[in-house]
Length: 214
Image 1 (cartoon, rainbow, N blue to C red):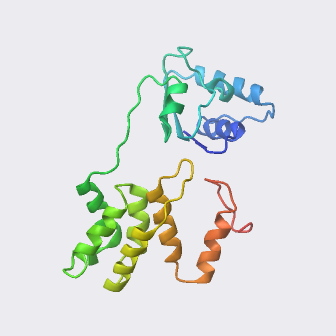
Image 2: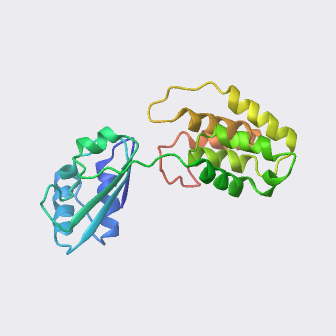
Image 3: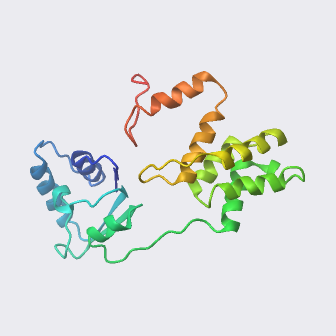
């Protein structure tokens, strides 16, 4: 398995897969690295390669992943927000993951926000807050955790903030996800916490931040 991410880094993708195969690639030249990885995968009797968070079409040959019938026992599964990327990569089957149903969304929200949502005073407001998350798991988890066991006034204020949030047109980011992240940021309880959040944003996506660098 390898996380691809928005900023394409072939060397990193190759290293992730190689490490799981117990293969050490010391070469620096991309095509040489791809050749070594491909030979190792071709030697496998059966292998599933998972490419997570694919933003744009990825050339599997440049990575070193057998494809197009080169190795019938090498299966590839990729996750992407872009159906176009899946089509360009000649995916044989595309399974579209819909947003959560109303019941699923509420159950997840309850799990994140705690038992307070079942009280008479909060239940209706909590339902409306959950609805503002649009059935998107990342939005539900973000908002639910921020409001966990908060008081009635905070829930009402949160609902108004989510309703009044101005959608931002950011490529690859659902407006409901943006509003939930914006909301949770504003709910951080200190300037220090806000500063820590913004410092994290200086690092690339999925980067494992060493505490010394931070």
